[in-house]
Image (cartoon, rainbow, N blue to C red):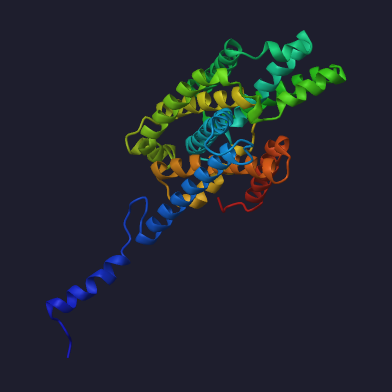
Length: 352
């Protein structure tokens, strides 16, 4: 006999509801549980590596004034890592959404080539003293302003024109970056060996390149740009659907894309002027974040991306410094791993 009693139906209801999918960013309870577990794990790793960089191998007794003095000195490097992680993560995820392409990075717009050209030109025209001449708060502000101005000119010219489109803008960015790189290479060949060695140290992305005096300028810029991107997360979800779908949904696609690219240029300019070129860090972080977050909603992707970036940077520095005693090769290692991941995803076409 079929059991149709109300209490029997009620007993079956929880099993049915647990398998129901929704149209939200985390469609099932399993996906939601996985997301929060991943986020919690990343928070634990970030706190662990951050605390390790502050306290590990500290020669002074724990809790003494000397211990905290050394920890405060190391805190600057940890703060710079957090700033770079925020810049690279938010900028790369937003840039890939705006361009609707997950295999390119904001570096394609020529930020790093411009940084290399400025540093090389300073040494070429002023000698070894040129490296010192391009340091300091005024020079930092000038470098950020030049990079953002170049980006605005690129966006304004190529996205606002009659025949402007995103593909032409990216192509022009590649050409400008290649041209600046060629000019830099030409000037580097004319330097003396000692000048070239000094310049090479500046052209590798490194946390040690950052000056603490830059932070009062860098932090407000990063906070403003980061908060605006976070507030714009729902619009980014619509932009990710593509130009035609966005316009049909009532979004001013060109205006929104230009606003996103402006914020991306600010974040990338600050990161590059602060620590130097880190071409594949953003790509590596964004690619890992898409896999870990497993959602389309940028409100959920952004926190995972920032935490992943900080874990990659702080974890690499902690391991290379305390295990292999090779702190200077961290950026090279990150670039090598990021480049390898990039090639793997390029070869696995269609899986992004």
